[in-house]
Image 1 (cartoon, one colour):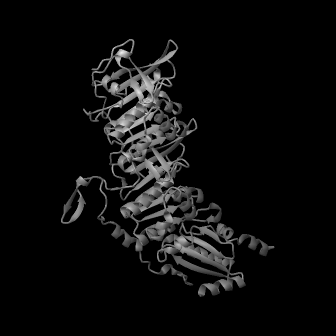
Image 2 (cartoon, each protein chain N blue to C red):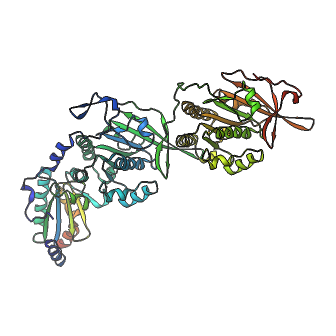
Image 3 (cartoon, helix red, strand yellow):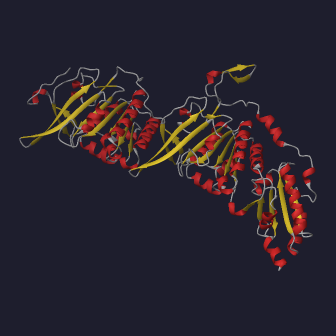
Length: 109
Length: 526
């Protein structure tokens, strides 16, 4: 239910629907979440939504979503789906991975 | 769904992995031991007595013999080989047999082929993966690793893979696991340092879980595998090889390493056909075969007379050599006919004629082989020599003997095998055939076609030392008449005739003429 409304909402607007897969509370995962939160606040303020999936609690999701590395950030919307692995410490690459770089350039112009 | 709007990281995480670890430590009854003798019952519980490794049988014909019981239980085994060498098939057979024969569920994690592709490839080789998946005995998980789809930023590990494996293993209680081919990870992810550390952790994890694992790896240059997987898997390494020599292919298997266990060190030929994979441990078994006193009629009375009146020894090897048209096949057919009359099963390997052609020809000299085929006493095994390599011929002959369990075999003509191998290869192959036949007390007749008119051709000389009895058939022309002569060049362990006797191929078969009707020579009965 919640999923549907979220999807609808983000399709209406240009909301980024992001899902971060982690496996327990490891330093890497904590860093990844902090980095993601910061990047989103800086570049996507007000139009992003982050879901956390802890694979230790929901191991079946690892197979269904083809998760291999942890942490993995999946951009579910806008399409196409994108996968970024790692602790997201390289902001530039995260922005490229999320396709935010070209958008920013346009804004700058 | 486990989505949450707040950071879920602060939540205490229950660790299902630790629970599974505690469980996997206990030794399951029903585990097959390498040697049953090394096991004793103590307080109703079975415990291994000494340091013998526990083994997980593969159920692959022949492989369990050369590994003395199977793969090391609870440990990873590396199977490496080039493209198309049968790695995936061997690994999948290990899983399917695990379920079907040993009641051990399995997980197949595939990195190269999707579940559907794998299922259809293996179905043609007699393995039904979807059935086992439906029964909840097998999980096939396709791990998709595509570099172009993944952006890497910062540190990561492969915990996602571990979670997937663990979840699959726990959900069906898997005992066996296959990772095919984990090296694909190196193509999909860019940081080899992380990968190597994670692989080391993975193999450690597999051992901790006591999973009997098979990891496949592509043959690499300068090493067994491209990414040096052999570094991580130190328990057992099996190498598969697919060689093509003079357009003839041979598959071979070798156990490179098997820590703490005896194993065959040779290269063993193996076959892949609609029944899957079978390894044929045909080796030179040494000279330990029995020597039987029993004698078998050659099927020709007068020839029996020449062999001290009784014929060949059971379990001996006989070479019938001669030029074209001397009746080697007829003489072999007499022997088979006599064996079938005694109710003994006979296996006839044909490398030149078809079974129907042979039966027709033999009917013309009064030998009815058809009746024995119909009664299930005689089986033909016809193949063009050029169809496979020598090793494969050896393997398929071995398998035919094993399945039909004959007391008598004929190989006709053995010389045709020379077209697919050198003389020394053929000799080495024959040595192994003969060793095997002798060990099983099977009498083997081999015909050899001499190309020229001289009876002592090199080929014969090369293989004759392997033979116990050597009968030479010759033709000469005298007064516009072809006359045929039979003589016994050697026959170990008996006083045989030294004369050269004339014989004729009549509508009643191979007839050795009496000394009186032969102008020269004297029949010697003993």
